[in-house]
Amino acid sequence: MKILISNDDGYQAPGIVALHEALKDLAEVEVVAPEHNNSAKSNALTLHSPLYVQQAANGFRYVNGTPADCVHIALTGLLGYRPDLVVSGINNGANMGDDTIYSGTVGAAMEGYLFGIPAIAFSQVEKGWGEIDAAARKAREIVERLAARQGMLGAEPWLLNVNIPNRPFDELLPARVCRLGRRHAAERVITQSSPRGETMYWIGGAGPAKDGADGTDFHATTLGHVAITPLKIDLTDHDALRYWAQTAAQLAQDVR
Image (tube, rainbow, N blue to C red):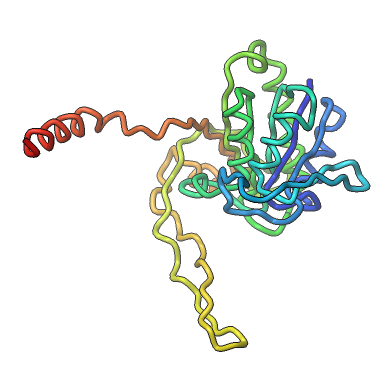
């Protein structure tokens, strides 16, 4: 089995180091990750400036680009082969609910999925890397069990978003398959004055859970369960297609 690892916290982040350590004797593993922290870069690709690949002393390769850049470059020439699985993380903080839209961790995994490769995004619920070794051990367990199931790798691609509570391994409750919850609107923008007297704006923190009901990733991780959410790419509002078709037809008649 061949695994490509990436992340959005940068190639030196404790999460990716722990994940590589946990998986390196399970498969042929290579790391291609951003040079610097690229949180909240989602699926962004760098199209108007050159990208460079460097290699660290530990063998990790790093790119002066986004998480999606890293996976894209790896899969379109850098590796020279097609991995069986793309794994992203372990992220420093949760990627639940609306977070998945912005997440560079999910974006890296999604890039693999878009290339037809099964992919998993791993995140810890709380920031600070508490119990990171336990999270890495749980990530290995999930990868190992999925790889052991016939047809999971090498067939149709799938994309999983996994959030792991910051708990010792023995205190992690069994994984639950969940839907994404929802968050309230983000906190107010933060303003500061620059040394030149100009106003600087900083994006505020994520809002609290708006929909954390039973069955959501928020609810599961609050109880101590590992939350697993299967994701898809199709953003089409299928339920509203008929309504908008009728509306478009009416607008066309109005134009006449």
